[in-house]
Length: 481
Image (cartoon, rainbow, N blue to C red):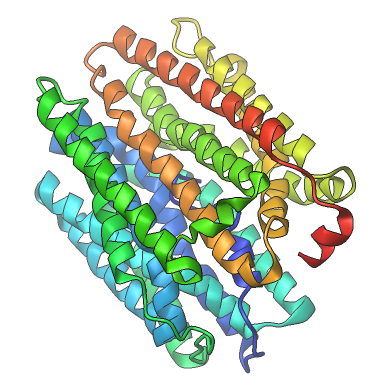
């Protein structure tokens, strides 16, 4: 699991896609799973490879953060555009283009002789993922109908959770046994199989309602604003950084963000991120929950393996295994919590789940002392975080879908998924301040503890936003909405 993988509302993107049953449902499902698996696996294995990359490339604290964010930035900024392009120009076409770009970029990363080259490859991987990920879900939604669609989406989600769980294990083993370059070569057979299945068996599909022009100005403004703000936050961690210049860059990025918001407001229902959805307090509340909670979780997923390897002497595979409870408990618990939430309402489990995540993150303050052990300190904290997320995820998805009318479920889901990835992007940009302290074990652990406290505060604030802003919809509205 990573900051770049499955977000809570990805699945409802497929549910909202108009369907026409295809002739080869099994091949369509397999192509969708393998294609999206590229983004899932690659987004998670890089976390356990950061110490090895640091030893070989000497990227510095800001460079380490960019190894994550070069990928996450382009994925976050362009996912909504990638989905819209698939609706206009053909979902299979964009799915195949995304796979092709992702695999070419993976080869660049595997052969990269320097930090600059691998960062270019990582950014290109993010663009490829932004094309293939939303269209893999749209192909799934278009190829199945009624009950079969729900079963296919459930299978896709289960395999996605499994990929998020085993990705760090496979990546850790490859890093320990062969080297970090092999984690990028892992993408080649998976992507080739997905592309062949899609080319051979999956029919082309489009959205006949997608008649408006694509929001290219919005996409450009969004990408530039995110890029400049991320650059300013990440570069600030570099020793000797020019604070005044970076403040200026950040101010320009913020100004472009305001221009992006104005552009999206003018576009109305044809915007990439339709701001009219924020008219209800419930949608505002669930959006803030997503941003804050996934910022806290995204920081944890990147930081914990790094600290365990750099400060505690874990191998890469051991650090990857340390995060296993998170995707496993989310996968096992979400369906049960979803049933409970249909009877009790989503507000209580979302709020309590976020507060439980806050407690779990605070428990990481026990990690890093001389006599600390995985079983006494790391595992209990991870289990509490995983439990809180398992309680949150299903009600979050339900609330997003019920907070808008049926015509806007797809755009609301895309909006929320983009917000989830944005939270992870911001968190990773700020982790450079922790990476800057890796020269001293004590300083690294102390910085990690500060990050854990900030994450706990964000999760607690997320829970407060739920209790203050979210209102449970009447059951009949939830059923129809």
